[in-house]
Image 1 (tube, helix red, strand yellow):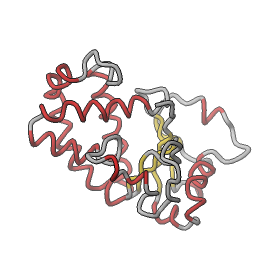
Image 2: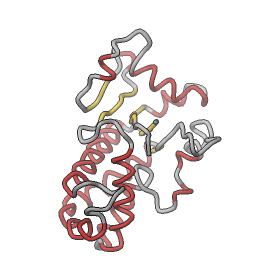
Image 3: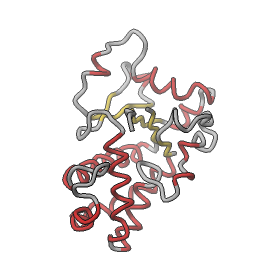
Image 4: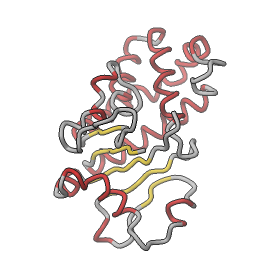
Length: 205
């Protein structure tokens, strides 16, 4: 999948004040305003990027330390989880499903909110082959993911055997269990920070 991922967290109330068709551009234009220092956008090494000026601090972008900006590692991690989940303990499977659902994996891909504009919060997708959204996770969904991650994190090492059985050495799957676990831990950090603020998450290509 030749897409990049730009992940934003945002105050849903502030974002919702923009017209539906302008909300995606509002995120990008607030974090990286026109005429700003482009090196801040392309020269980052990872972590949160905040807009310049205190008045614009209603959203931020996150760059993953464990990827190069490509959506591919996230897609591969989601596919890897789909492969290994039948081998996971039931409690871990349920918690991981709740955590990853709507982020990088969906039990039924047709239910992905990014395909529908996030229940009308964003413009509907007219061509699924050219998405303008990769994920939409409103604040109430983010909040529910925190206890799910709290249930997953201590059990991550128990997924080594399922990973080795179903993913190791397979094209289109994470290269290593360590990389898979590190990416999930980053998602855990992102979700906790967004939940702490009561904000939602938006991923755009």
